[in-house]
Image (tube, rainbow, N blue to C red):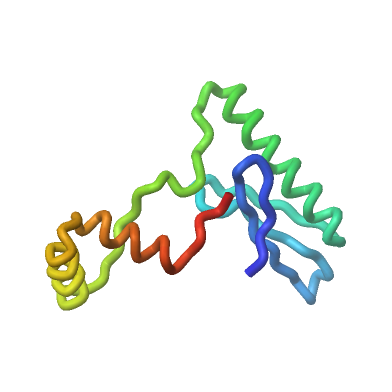
Length: 112
């Protein structure tokens, strides 16, 4: 899925055939921020305006804006995979956290 990016925030791109409109929402934060447009250019402009408005609203209310993907998350992998990863990490002489971080780094290239 292609995403929009602006000031470190990411937004989805979806379409409603019935309404002939493009729409999306900011991803990776809990606040629900939506935007829409009839063309790709309008959608991109609405996304950027939504990010700017979110940041301005947080600033005006004295809130710290949410940061997309804080760098920590829980993954449920089941007993067998958890045990296998822990054993492999121990064999390699690294922490389970480092083992998983390395596996993710090999599977996905970090953004930026």
